[in-house]
Length: 356
Ligand code: SF4
Ligand code: SF4
Image (cartoon, rainbow, N blue to C red; front, side):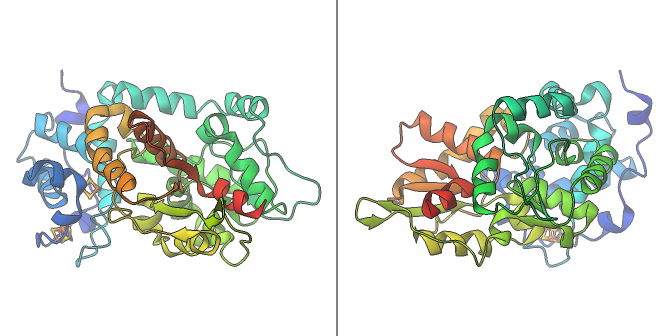
């Protein structure tokens, strides 16, 4: 049954954003889903054509191709930096999903994760039980963002970040930044949560999650948010060694950090300082974690990940480094399936390893 919202498709998109695409196709080679299918509908240009058809009513709102493509898109925004017309695809996708994933049409896994992200008290308790970082004595007016799922899944990341930058305050009452909501059909709630977090955390906010950094800065301002490698840029020390040689490390970019905030030189610079840095040919390409994607479309997520694991194994490296907890989880799973000797680490952990 088609809901009221779906039967009256119009004014879904910001017309200025939707009109910007000139259909040049420069974005096609950058798009991981187009690489998988070679199908125009799975490309950024094809999806914008679908959005326009939805907006104009040429396609009915319950057309199955619309549902499929809104979900198949990784939301990686690799199409943005290569676009000569400055199309803000990420925003268009948020507006599309706000419409497409209304109510029960939202994938079950996304509904569950948003429900879980809203349980701020549970995250606080999990953070305490898992011994995530807490405010040390003498902390400055800047703060470390804990991240809701990172607190439970990778509590050591915040401890490492705090060991590197002990001047940071870590308020335990902090909630979700709203990135999960914004990328999965609830942009209004996503903004509201980011504003709340901006008010809760004093000073400059340092994050260990590229996706959170991009969303938070889009709401509260770029000058208030730093990803950890930006913050640590000129203060890393030590070396990561394997026996008597420097460790060989590679980076997996965070899509939103790179394509949304243009932060990709900084993690490379800090890694080059503490180890022998190796650039993977596809470092900038999505790993398939893509927020909720690995849960919503596990098969496609693996299809995106598999060539990346091939590259990692061929590179002769000791560590592959992630700047986002979702990417870290995805890489670890892929490497474990292959029984690979390469270890995946968060950038906070490898910098701490160097400093110790
Ligand atoms: S590169 Fe930009 S303008 Fe060209 S087709 Fe892609 S989105 Fe449209
Ligand atoms: S966000 Fe990523 S997957 Fe989606 S259209 Fe752009 S490049 Fe392709």
